[in-house]
Image 1 (cartoon, protein in one colour):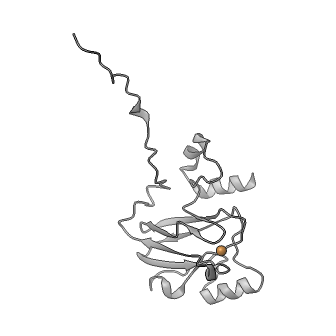
Image 2 (image 1 turned 180 degrees about the horizontal axis):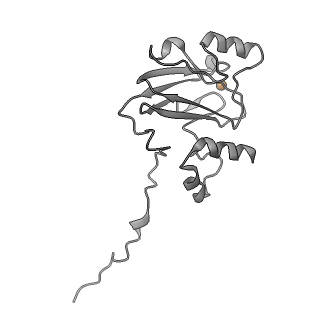
Length: 172
Ligand SMILES: [Cu+2]
């Protein structure tokens, strides 16, 4: 309940539209770009245009982190990590000393990507299980700041699907 309200705020302009459809179910991804299962980012590879804010959501019941690899992001880019740490090392220490920076089930984390390039990140507790991800920031990405949250499905607006004049009859 509170969580929904919070996510609605984070989700931005497209949430209201998505909400109308109603039939989404527990795995609807309209309020985030990248989910987190018990030990994986889903998807683990994601592309956005510069200036896009990416939203992660913990879609599992396990606590996770989103932590950048300092050496795995563009030189000019800002480091990012849940918990607000300024380095991978600090994030690891924070996690060791009381699971700081953890993203609990249902919670979100977001980061704006402005510098083009490749960003590698990981989840501290599940790094040994291969819980890592990559964000590609490129002009070629379909997900743009202006475009909002793009759900890549084939659910194109079916407004003109019901053309009444489909069967014109056999003429005169
Ligand atoms: Cu994890």
